Length: 328
Image (tube, rainbow, N blue to C red):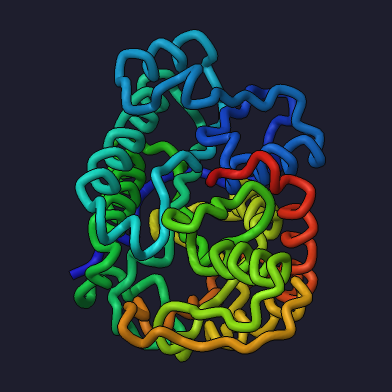
């Protein structure tokens, strides 16, 4: 079983109008803020965003009122409830319900107001837990999901189908992009709600600060992860909007991966930690490997530019500069 991969949309990608209104849903988050930075750098003059306090994206009436007033030409749907293994496994209803509400409300309002070009951002967790590596876009719905984040994954799969359905029924050139594991400025560094990389940065930073001689990480350290700096993702999103069209989701990543143990060692180096690292094998590892096949993306002319070492160093610098007001 797979989602639809062909349609009759007649659209030729090209440069976007720099003076048109571009709404970034989730502009204050890690992905959204990176998109805002990239759009401003590219010369967009009317980039719009609303905080969750200003606009609750789960409030259907409020979302439709916002779109009626703002009338964006372009939309990047980067708003989502996100979290690491623990958060996803503990609150699956929240991750399913909230994300479905956000997606349906934003896309329905975008359709009602004639948004020309929309990009929906998902996650590599949409693919089966044991998908052949590297994972091609065709692997979608070919096997069981990773159970610790299946609710979140189902919401994102529904978003892909929503985009495809708009293309089929209304002929609009909306697209979907599925990033690999992301990191960078404005990430969630909280001990219980973060993904593996920001959790490691915080853990090793605090160990270095406190003079600890041992750090214990979850799992075995053997799972492999592909990591993409969020600024590279933002660059890829704009590139896709201007160079790609099609119903199938596009993988966005680096095409290479490393073990979590290797990531931890690099974080230890960047943070100046010189103690030992142990692994609590009673804790879950999650998916054994999630390496995306980025052939389709490469064919559009885009490849990632930020090395993991450089990206981690820059992220740690940002963390130090913003530690006083990060989520606890």
